[in-house]
Image (cartoon, rainbow, N blue to C red; front, side, top):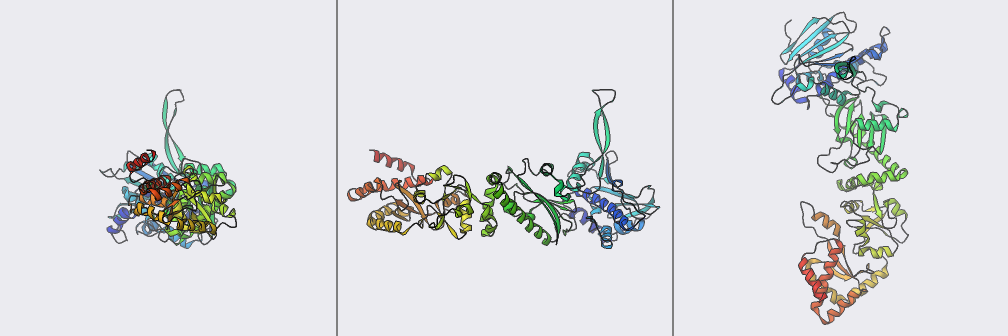
Length: 625
């Protein structure tokens, strides 16, 4: 029979589809299996309205087999088959979808849906095959036909022998080139992995002849090769089962099988939505942080399925960055996919799903915090930093979502507490939520700046991570209470403290001005401290940048040399101050020495570097002599 030309616009269109539409060659098998599943579905739908047809699901299957010697890969289905006219219409016209036409003509019921939409998936076969042969016998027909093509040059359709209804697709796999290894599509393990990856939840069995070894009957030691037919796919996905049927072990097994992590998940969330957009999802909150979580290599995202077929391995749009630790999958039959079914054509449906998933994750975390505190604290050790980054990023737009999930170490409780718990314990006269920043709990507990706040009986939150202060600056206030660093210039503590302080500043103005001139631009001011009780000196700050923030910002690669506005505070009730006053009256050189020593002591307390360590040690020696 003479070769026919494709009805679509020409060689260029077919070449574009083969070389440009699909990002990975392996998806050809996904497309052919999806078409085979559609073909079986069509018999199912016909059986719903045709009393002469009986649909027994166990009688229907898809089979994949490879012949390495002849370099052929065959995909067989027991579906509805195609007549000569349908072969002509569906395979002779690129982008003509028989499945879409069937879907439009029939009312689909019982949770089934036809996968194919565009009619181009079949042509993905040409990415790996030099010759594609389709042998098909339609339901109700006595005749079978063979469609064959080598690509853009056209195709032939000829009568053929076939006993059973269904379709057989034979691919003559290309020879290897320097750049491409086509042998992989003839290897058993590779074919199994592709089927498991993309088509594990096709509702009909996908069978393969799988090789193995077993002991010979007449020998205990010798092995013989054998082949047996195995069903490769799981068929019924866990997310389509009723939650009542499933146990925690079932969800944990799925987590392991999908390689979501090497840990056990702390929590799972099973979502089934049948509304404006239909979808199912299984989400996991991991126990442990992946080793590459805070690296550029880490990819966030959920597996995205369309009607049980894997479309995207990591759909980043389904998760906000602050919940990027969540693992799992989403399956929807309502997604608008592009022609290759590898990308989403419209994002409206995805945004609806993502919004709902976001709420589900937050609710689950709040429930964990409320009802399983130990588990939540375990989770928070791994991912609390990510929640704080979420508060800080996007100019604080997500703070309302995340602030109730944050925890910090409490000076009073000696454990992690939430902002809500802190505020609920505040005395009536306490105006601010107080916090102190440092490298560790032990370092913060020794900070001189905490003395006055602690003496007033107020609780202090300890900020030990570099992101803490930045996140709190974005929150600004919680339940109408502002945050206040214990190193802040104004602690908001009673008026009589301020009056005493102002009196001391006035009384010792000359001394403090002299000390400020010695320190030059190192500090903004020198003044009497209203916070120190037992320590002689400390640094406080004015403005938005604290000392901890200065350290963090200046440790970054793009160091902009940002400085906090530091104030040197002197405890006027300490013996050291008496020595300062005496020196000011009798020996100005000693005032220089003491001022530099006190300033360097204050730097050391804050964990800041001393500008001239040699000078500092010499100053200590002078005092000792």
